[in-house]
Image 1 (cartoon, protein in one colour):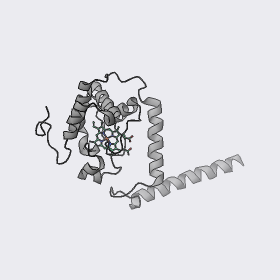
Image 2: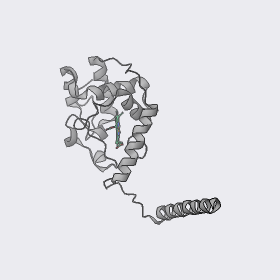
Image 3: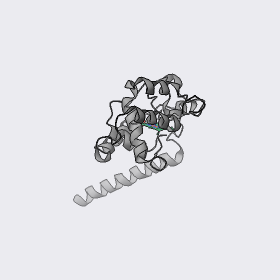
Image 4: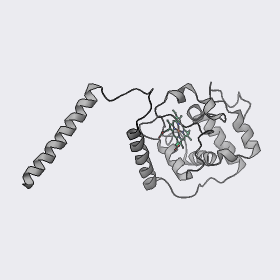
Length: 185
Ligand code: HEC
């Protein structure tokens, strides 16, 4: 009896694996980026990301202190590394062709910011990236301190002191121009 039940379970697993293999091989699983993700894909990706963050994202306070200079450094790092996908101070209106074409779409932070997110979560996402999305990992190209500086800027993006806000308003993300050309340091 038990043997029969195990046999049936094994057969079901084998059939499911074969079905999955045939689906992938036959090209029936969409590979295009110009589509809206299904609810199941969205649920799986966000649940897995939240669970990962709960387990591994740093819980300590941001070691980079809240000063005008650090926020300004954050604006510069953002302009150089992130604005092409996450937009300028104009938010959704500044979405670049790259941002518009990605699957998943990168949030335009001046419109859909992450000020509510713990800075440790943003640190982890920037350092490690988000798998199967266009969000790259910056662990190889930025130092931890620079990543925390970016997390600080993201946290305070909607309440920047006037001098920093002025620089942020000058960032032009598309077509990409260097900060020097836009009159910043
Ligand atoms: C090539 C495009 C691209 C670049 C460059 C990029 N990102 Fe992203 N980023 C994405 C995409 C796409 C997502 C959405 C992933 C998802 O839906 O899970 C994302 C998500 C994020 C999130 C999570 C947003 C949320 O709502 O939870 C943060 C934080 C983030 N990026 C920060 C940055 C920072 C900081 C930089 C620069 C150091 C950067 N990204 C550079 C594409 C990019």
